[in-house]
Amino acid sequence: MKRATHTTVQISRLQAKLSRQVKHLSIRLGLWLIVLLCACSAPSASDPIDQADQQALSDVAGADSQGPAPLRVQRIKLGEHSTDATGKSPKVVFDLPADVTAIVVHVDGPDEFHYTLAALTRDAGFAMIPQAWLDQTSLPDACVGPCQNRIVAQRGYAAFLFPNTPLIELRPGLHQIRVYAFDDARKPVATQVEIGVDFVRSTEVSTTLKLPMNLCFTGAKGWNAVNSVDQQRLQQAIDFAQTILSAANIEFGPIRRFDVDPQGQYIATQKPVDSDLAKLFESGAGLPKAINVFFTDRIIAAGAPPGANVALGVAGGIPGPPNEVGHIRAGVALSLHIPQGQPDLLGVTLVHEVSHYLGLFHSSEPGPNGAHDTLVDTAEDDPKNLMYWSLSEQSLQLSHEQIQVLRRSPWLVAP
Image 1 (cartoon, rainbow, N blue to C red):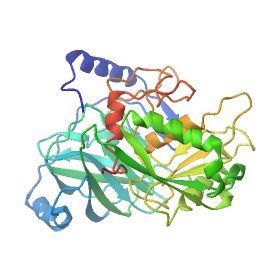
Image 2: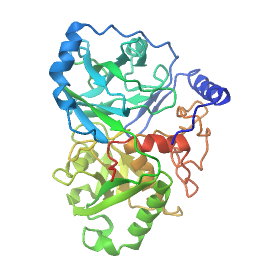
Image 3: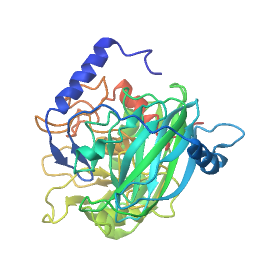
C-alpha cells in the first residue's frame, strides 16, 4: 500500500528534482524513446463539459461501462474519431468511476503515423496533460517538462499510463481526451484513430498478481520452444527476473513457449514500419494474450556494421500496448549475444525491459543534463536501481513508488 502521505520534505525533493530537469533543453534519442526537457508551464484549464458531451458519454461509454461486478481491468471503447489538418481529434469524454485507481489511454491508428495526447483534462479545470503543451514545442515525441505525468508518442498503437507519478491523483468524474497524430517529419496529419481507456482497480499489496509471458524463439543460439526447457542460462535469467519482481508481489505465469519467424535472429532497430524489429513483434500474432518476449542473437542500430552497437534489449513501448499481441510495438526483444569481457546480463535485461513495458521509465538518463523520473523515492544517477539507463549486475533495486507503478499495469491478472 502507498504510504499515507508525502511529507513536505519529500515534495520539496521532487520539486527540486524536476526544476533541475527543466533548466535545459536536451533531446536524447533512445531505441524508440525521445526525451524532451523543456520549460515547465502551469496546467491549462479544461473546457467545461456541456450537454453535448454528456450525450456523447451516454452514447459511447455508457454501454461498455455496465456490468454485474467491477473487474480489476475494464476496457471502455470510446469509438473511432478523426484528427483534422492540425493533427488533433475532437475532445472525447469518459466518466471515471470512483473505485478506479489507474487508467491506460490507448490509441490505435495506421502504423505509418505516431500518436500522443494533446490533452487529458478534468472538468474542474485540472489538466493531467496540459492543453497548450504542443504549442510550446516543435517536437511532439515526448512531454516531460509541461507534463508531470510523462508521456511518449508511439507509432501505430500508443498507450499512456496515469498516474505514473505521485504528482498526479485520479479523481472520479468526467474527463476529456484529445489525440494528436503526426508523421515521421513531425508534421500533423488527418487520419482515423480508435480511442479507448482501460480502467484499473487496485488490489491489496499482499495480493500476488500474475504476469502471463510468451517466450518466443527465433532459433538464435539454437534455442527453440522444445529444447529451451533445458537451457540453464534461460532458466537462470527467468529466476533472476522473478526474484526482482517478487518485491512487487508479481509472478510470471503462465509461461508458454513458441517458435516464431527465424528471420528475427538478427534485427536492426529503426523507426520505419517495415523494420526488422516491427516484423519480429508482428510475428507474435495469434499467440495467447501475454507479453511476448523475443530472443534474438543481436540487436543492432539500423545501418551499423554487423556486430556493432549491440543493444541488450528493447521494449515496444512505455508502456507497451496493453493486452495486445502481433502489433509492430507488441513485445520485448532481448539479445543473447554476450560482448567479449562482459558479464551475462540476460536476467536483469529481461526484468528491466518488461518493467518498461509495464510503464516504468529510466530512473535517470545519461549525461549531466539527463532527465530523471518523477518519482520521489528514486535517487538520481543510482546504478543500483533496476531502471537506471546503464544496466549492470548491481541493477537490482525497485523503489516503493516504482512498485506502485508496476502494479497498475493492465497486463497483471488478479486471482
